[in-house]
Image 1 (cartoon, rainbow, N blue to C red):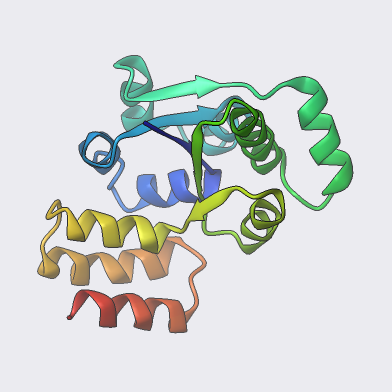
Image 2 (cartoon, one colour):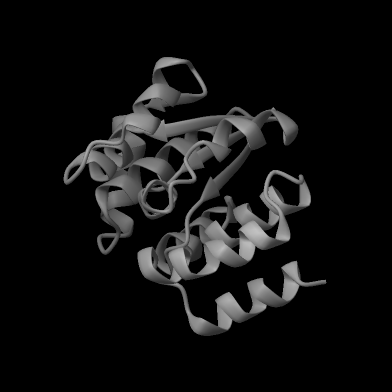
Length: 171
């Protein structure tokens, strides 16, 4: 099992594109155990509740977690430009790594991707997630093309990244 930590930018993007339902479909196919740090959950629901996310938590598809306080504080001190949710996810991932479990963090924000790399934590971007969804045949090519304008509208993705994504699914 791979421990997969969600970041707020990813969860909010799923919510805004109405694709939260994909998480429990993809997770078992990839042997993922999906966690959401408490600070990430708060970020995702501060402006708008997410009934789909709450249902995933209630049925155990997504597991709330809290990083160790001392690890959280060390990462917060070392990387003060990160948000609380990003710090919580990275701190939890670091703690999981000490237990030798496979850990993956899903985020599209370049700052936590860079820090995760420095800490030896693997990352997956939102577009990488959707590539996996497509490869696992959970969405058709047509559905993917319909998704791209929603991703453009609801997420901060570069035109180059979206062009690369479009090219990869058109193969």
